Image (cartoon, rainbow, N blue to C red):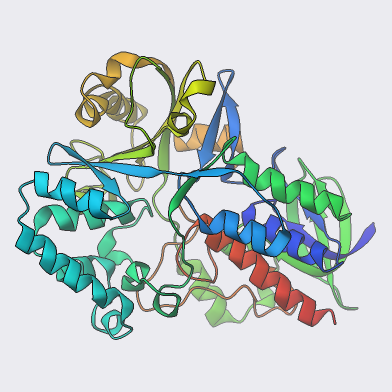
Length: 453
């Protein structure tokens, strides 16, 4: 049985960031990861012999900034545009003058756009987020125009939650009201794995360790202080445990029930993840020319109606979906485009036949609504149901581990059990995103350093 000052459970971005920050301060750690890859939902995998990004589709500019500012790591990236298909036009996002020009083409008057721009100042005021609790209600307050509202709904539909169930402050334009600032969307050259690989290499160079393909079974406090971590391959003693496995399973499955205050435990039991995602990995011929500078495309009909269908356990007539084509930002270096389609799985059980029918509908009619004739350029594809995804990659394809609750703060990285911490997308700071996971790890590491002084 080996001894360690800090053991980190899970090599997701939150766990890696914790280890990297501690390593930079001279505190080594042991990371235990159940798969054979770092990065969790932010990496890549081979599917039918081809490499694809998995999980996270949106990297904000905050990611390379955090790497540079905290760890001195320079990572190559390109800023990119997101295209949202609405009213027959491809609307660029984030919002800038290109967006406004395109909205004009959608028959939105100049007066409507001016009113909308003037109301954007509300997003810098704390009072706004007291008046409007849900993101949906705040979007409605910004404009009466249907298309402008849909644009706002779609931009946050990526969270896997109905906009009327998201906290309004996710629209905040300043750190004092919005939590983590994500920044402009970027594509890491070489794919999502560059983030996890950069952090992993940094950790290993600083003499910390990572053990792959080892499953954590139990975390038990010791009478003498610290914890025993039991895995399928051994036992470890440690002063500090950081879990990046997921907040709810850490509390309800991996630790003894008698550790927790009953009210706290009951609260944790009531939390739910966001909707699961169905993934289609596909190859697209380079004969199709995507708009330059774009790496992600959205197609949606009516976001609110869609979420109502999904929450009632059925697919909508036409699923909104996200097409991620990172290779469009490096088109000269590839023989074909490696792309991913993601769309939401309804709550509860859906027959495999119905699921496959919906996937086929997206691959044919959906892609052609996004770009005329695009389906004809699909070379091959593989559909991954949530169960297949878990079997192949080791985790469920949720967007985020805990569904946000209006009016409730996110859980702290500190649990009521001294020196047991949680990091990742389920805890502070607010606003789910890849930089949020990084910042949760950095925040956790700072608290650990105070504990170990």
